[in-house]
Structures are given as C-alpha cells and as structure tokens.
Length: 93
Image (cartoon, rainbow, N blue to C red):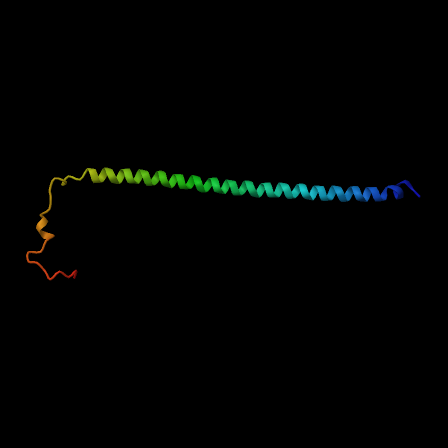
C-alpha cells in the first residue's frame, strides 16, 4: 500500500469539509449582502420621505405667505346673499 492510498480517505474527508465550510461561508456573505442591500433601500426610502416632508413644509409656508398678503382682507362681503329674502319650506333642496 502506498502512502497516497493510506491517506486517500483523510484527504477526501478534508476536501469535503473544506468544500462544505466554503459553501457555508459563501452563504453567510450572500445573506449579509442581502441584508445590507435591504437596509440601504430602507434608508433611501426614509430619506425620500424626509425630503418630501421638507418640500411640503416649504410649499405650505409659501402658500401661507400668499394668503397673508391678500390686499382685500378688509372688505367683507354682504352677508345677505347667504340668506333668502323669503323663508322657504324647510327642505334642503
């Protein structure tokens, strides 16, 4: 029996263990990569939400500024247009 013949079983077992360990390592790296990509996506979505909130706040402030600058706020419309001159029958329509 040669030296290689005596060690063949051990070499085969060692190569199987290395293969399984390598496959496990690749799986762990793949799973970690997926988790990090998902975390990046969540962070990007959160950032876009904050940007939208900031834009809405800015637009709201601009809208408030234009409402506050109306020149005819001192003029009040005649309230008689809301009330009929003669009472109706009480129906809605």
